[in-house]
Image (cartoon, rainbow, N blue to C red; front, top):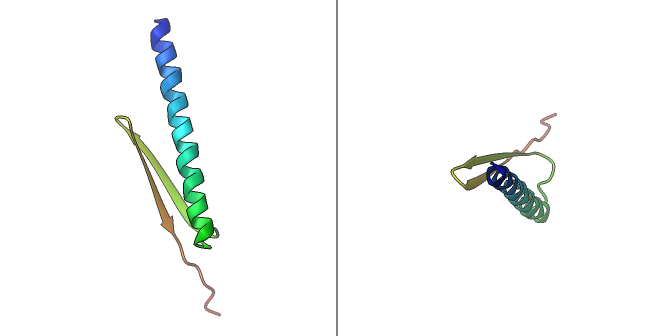
Length: 63
């Protein structure tokens, strides 16, 4: 029982660490592209795979 709790904590912490790392990398890329104003980040975790998708949005006033 205790081993399962430790595994769950380890798994949870691993996911958190990977999310922070990937989002930090993504923010750096967006900053270099001068695109920090409008974007959406989608994060999915499935069977040990972490998928991070980013959508840039271009919003310009027309008048």
